[in-house]
Image 1 (tube, helix red, strand yellow):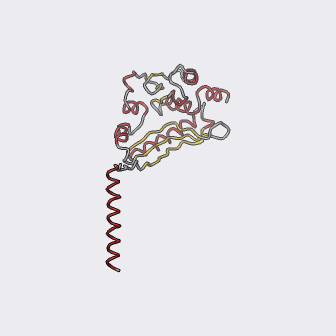
Image 2: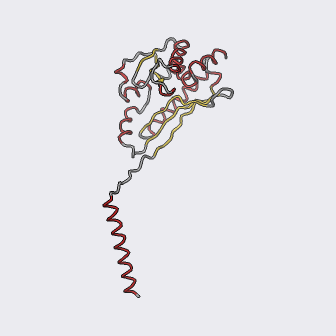
Image 3: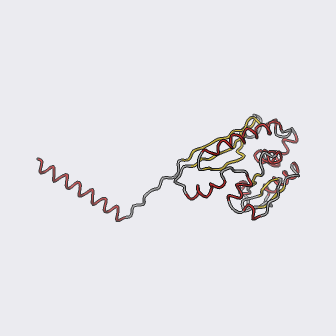
Length: 212
C-alpha cells in the first residue's frame, strides 16, 4: 500500500487509473491537461510532478506534446497528429470523434454527454473520479461506453497497484436537449406590437360601446 500511496501522491487518482488503462492496452492514450491544475506548461510545478511520477511508475509510456496538453501513450505522436479535435479524439479513443464539429455548429440540436466514472473504495480522499468524458449526437455509441467500462473494471480490479482501491466502473449518459433559439425583437417590432395591442383594445372598447 505504500507504493500505491506514493503513486497517488505523485500522480493523482484520475491520472494513475488512466495510466494503468493505457499501460494495459484498454486505452490507447489519455491527455494530461495543465489547465486542470491552473497551469500552462509541463514545466509548471504540479504538472511536472505528475509527469515525473508517471515516468517513474510507467517508464514504458511516452509523453507527446500537443496543443491541449501532454498525450500519455505507448505510441509517440507528432504535434500535427493531434492538431484538430477529430485527430485528438481518435488518439484518445472517443467513438464519436467525427461528430464534434457537428455538435459545436448545431448547439440547438440534442446531444449526449458520456462519462466514464471509477468508483473508489472507502478510505481515500475521493469517492469517485471521472477518467473520460465526450459528447455524441445520439445514444448510438453508448453501447461502446458500457463495454469499455466493463473491460476497464476487470483490468483495474486485477491490477496489483490500483486494484485494492477500485470498487466499480460506470458508464454514465446525460442527454442534453439543446439550446433554444431566442428571437431578438428590435425596438421597431416592439413598437409595432404595442400599437397592435392598443388597436385591439380600442376595437374591443368600441365593440362594447356599440353592444351596450
